[in-house]
Amino acid sequence: MARLTDPTPPAGSIRPLNSGDQAGGLRLSTAAGWNQNPADWQLLAKTCLGRGLEVPGAGLVGTAMAWPLAGRYSWINMVLVLPEFRGRGIARSLMEALLDDLSQQGRIAFLDATEMGESLYRKLGFRNGPRLLRLRCAAPTRPVPADATGLRVMTPADLDAVGVLDEAVFGLDRRQLLENFQLRCPQLAWVHESAGAITGFVSARDGRNATQLGPVVAADRAVAGRLLRRALAEVAGPVILDVPAGDDVWLKEVNGLGFEVQRGFMRMTRHGEELATDWSRYFAISGPDFA
Image (tube, rainbow, N blue to C red; front, side, top):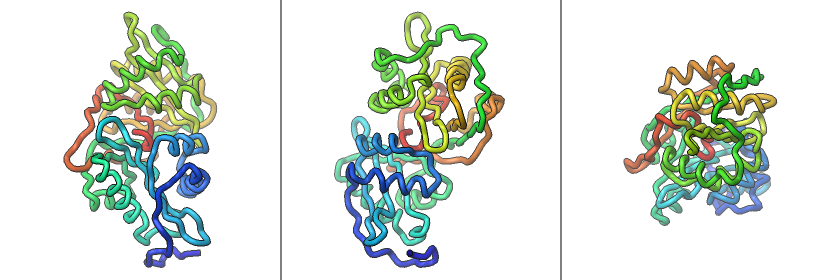
């Protein structure tokens, strides 16, 4: 087994990832303590392109993936290296290969960086954007909202309207993602209606360590809070939520529901580009995997 102190690049080859790499990818994210489960890796294999490093005798030891989005955009995720192979330039090599692939496609890359990864991404031309916070609640109290007016379970028939609202707030089309989440966790997908129009929604996915709530999109904090409480009423076990760091009022409300800050991360952009995200209506992201 390679040692953590060994600075030399391992003998192996960087290659495109394929659908047969799901088990290897899950091994990597599990070793990192991340929340992905087999269903997440099925979604990643379906939606993303990627690069992996294969080492003889060790299998897949590193990955870097990108979700091609509408137009010329892409979302980078799953930059992972097995702990015993870290510190040997693998993440940078994988990222350089992936960025070259994206450049050939004319795509602009975005990502959410952990504090550990920020310095690498800056070296690759990424620049700071909004800061986000990972919050966790070990045991939700199932707080049903006092006012449930306008709240109802999301159905497949709602996905067109939900997708339109999400695109207006996030800035790009994520219909495929929202369909996947609604199918996986239908009891946690809720919408808010006003005057016959959907003005907010919450969705979620199951994870290896915890349920990830998000995205939460709403007209204002009051609607966001009602949606969040309604989803929490259906959750058993720990929950994680990734929220903008700059909204102190929202953070106070979420803290009051039992959530505690675990760590921060940074939304980073490249080549001076920015997503047209309306942060006044985006109260929880879908996670660093899918923005």
